[in-house]
Length: 100
Image 1: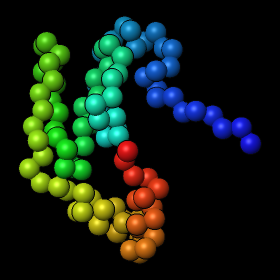
Image 2: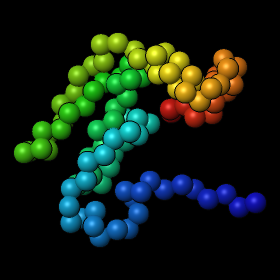
Image 3: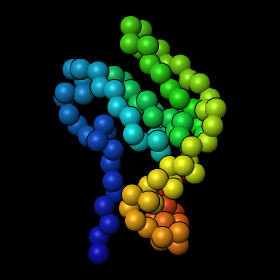
Image 4: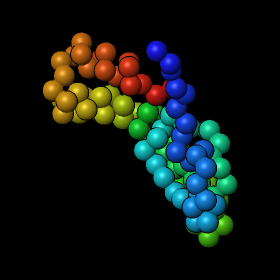
């Protein structure tokens, strides 16, 4: 079986990415990873006790605030409850889908 390397959507050749700025979130594993010019990643893992990131649009300057609480336990409990996973299956699911 041939394995394919996954490529982030913003690294694909798309002329639209050079024409308009794009702001996105919900990808905490990208913390401190560079994105192409004009593409702004705002998810820096606040729920995972990292930091909240804000972007001032006028000059595209980032600001960060350290998390004041680790919400990951609440998140894990809520996620596992919604997925109806028992504790063992929840641990397995989270280890497979963990952040880097």
